[in-house]
Image (tube, rainbow, N blue to C red; front, side, top):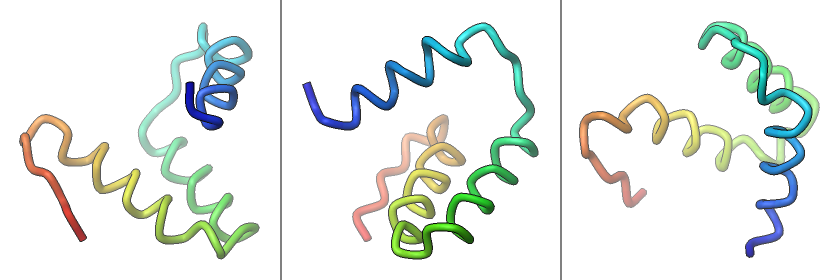
Length: 61
């Protein structure tokens, strides 16, 4: 189990029943980066991966 799995599990436990829009998710991600600029690159990579998940494109940058 990765350390991040605990955060993912907490997210599922606390918010698993909610439906949110991609617009709301994007806004929350922007807010997080504004508050934590050191995570800009990982958040950008996650957003890009989520955006391209159906394309089968792997981004090795």
